[in-house]
Figure 1: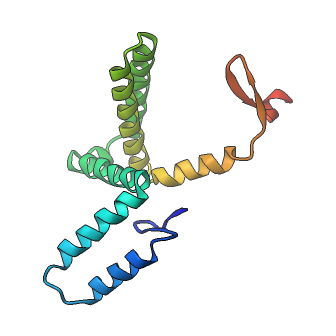
Figure 2: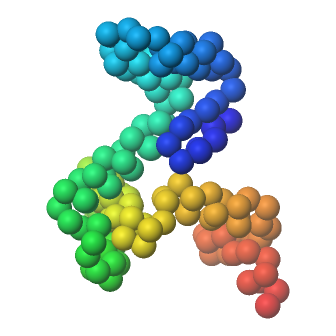
Length: 153
């Protein structure tokens, strides 16, 4: 289980690695940054996609800041989302997997920047969505999941 405490990821089973990090931080070693990088790489390998997604989100936000996109009108990002969604649909319908992958990635970048502009954390937005749907009941209607409250009301 991974818990995001803003910028620190903790997972069960990594106590030895965390102890090693604490010892290095407390030491006066000249090679501390190299050692910390080695430990971070080891942790990243064990945490895998969670850390990778976090790092990618941070990279996208820094890229956005460098281009001053973070201070622009979020409406432009909404328009960009629609454009990317159209490209995704086109790639899917024309059975072009490379275009589908590119469009999905572009959509995630645009969503990340929109969240940044609105001072929202992508992980928190996803967590909120998960909290809302995880216990939801419904059924498939014409290939789409419809929640019970929409079926009954």
